[in-house]
Length: 200
Image 1 (cartoon, one colour):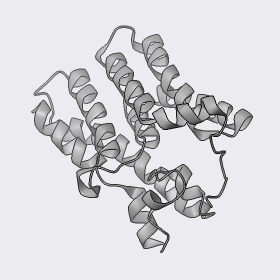
Image 2 (image 1 turned 90 degrees about the horizontal axis):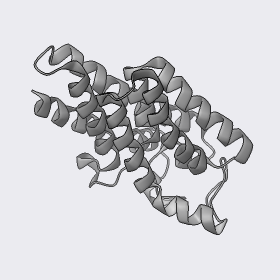
Image 3 (image 1 turned 90 degrees about the vertical axis):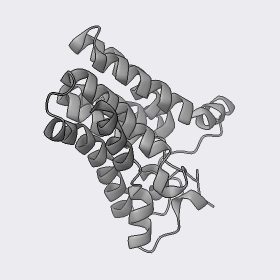
């Protein structure tokens, strides 16, 4: 049952709202401009705030929905915490490497936020607040995402201690860092783009 739940979560994660919203609003494919990342921050580079907001909402919602749906369909076949932890990782992996879009996915920040919200609203609030504070001070989305990703497992540990949720969020944090490896190089070189900056 846990494997079936993980497969379903992966498929849900593979739905790229950045691509869907761009097509619906007649915008260029987000994988062809800016950071070439199909995510809300890159969509914002088009100047279309509504499109960016819809992308953020959709990608976050699928992370939340995958974890929520697991509880509805796979009631008690596996201990809930373990089952939800596997699904949490699977939906983020689906977003990063979507089977529906030739495995060219986003970096997983919005989807991870949805996962955190499904697990614990306070956990999501802590990570979101971290992102917002860093983003306001530095105006660099990737830096905010990296610091929020690193902080999330610590917030989870404060809430749950040694727990499957803490381990799962730690894995998700490592995945987010891996997907931001180019951004890390740019940050070290001082060439990372800022929030709201338009692509050439």
